[in-house]
Length: 272
Length: 307
Image 1 (spheres, helix red, strand yellow):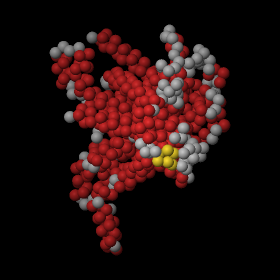
Image 2: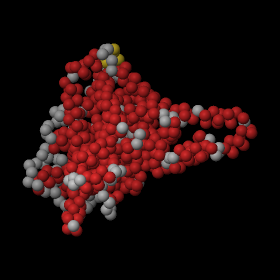
Image 3: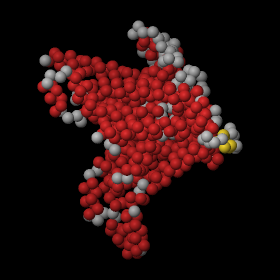
């Protein structure tokens, strides 16, 4: 019995190791390559041990306004998430509480459509009104993806707050609006944190909106990495360093809030 | 809040009435901003796209001429490139979903036990889900480089022939399917794991008493009970997979020889590389139609699976 148990355990850990390697090797390789001297980076067979260098990171930040791209990414993500929370939370509360299912269904449809379905008209309108390559223009498009995501996930969270609590507040003379602000929002704070982080990540990762409607002024990090690939000579070390700069904040964010993340990710899917 | 409102109302009865009115109409007022924003940002462009699809638009965006249904007819009946895109999208999506389901099921079954470090490992598996696709695509591209990429080095270690990965017409879709699955598997795994954790115990105990094997147990009890979770996971992943653009655009731009030119890539090309905004709108409209039809079918399936 115990030997069978031990074999089973060994198998489990072996399988787990293989799976982890399969899914995480790329991150390992990205970091290793970003610290590898240029001479060794294309060697075949690959070199595993070397003296790490920061030259690629220096190149990324010295020869390109990467700090500006980083700030652009931050500004656009924070603004679009903030605005979406302000208009999305009351709407999600209302849909959850008043069972406005037709609105929920419309929301699902909106979530399914890819961004490109709105981009041709937006491109024409933006061009006419000089909104191409402006922060407000890009933020507006990011709201298009962030707002439905926030509402969809939050409907699920709001439905989970027991309605007895709300009724009690109403009976005690609290107004409807007061109930939402004083009871519903504080109780759903973990959910709101999760969805804010999820939508921040989705905005941070977005590529196509800035590709079409952005430009040098609103260049975000994903576009900057793409620029390295498309226009520069292919410099693997710098490419890996640039990719690391984009990915690290998101990975760190995911690790810090992992407790909420899994809930936020599955909430919108399992419920509703 | 109530007290403040009351003290204020002594000064202005009007303000109080306004508050009361807002409170009574809250079901209309709360969703209003979101509805307006979505209608403006999506409804208006949608109508605009409809209008553009019956026009020819000049590259300078100054001359618009009416062509009626000619664009749509051309997309549906004469455009070989569009037809190719439909097949590529279908191949890419179906292969992605099958691979994701298989991998995620294995992972969920492996993780469906309690052990020290479970939450750490589960978090590590979530990282591909949040990683920026643009950045990871670039790294995959480096790893899949045919002559000195690390993946071919691994194949060599395993005594397997090297692959051209995304550079060859036959392996380009399988390579992209793997990358898409790599991004999507964690999500499917999370949902399946949640499903597995909530399964009732009795059927399994009964099966064990009846002497069922592990495989029988899985096929005849676990799978049917997990069906709702599987349908939901596949629904969301199908939608996401139809929408994939970043990965394909960065790795292949639809090549080699249009072998990875999905509907999304083709839509982008016609509208924003060839600048045929009228014809591009017609392509996008058909793309949108396809997504909506598939979504409705999937939603129906989901509702039935839940009953």
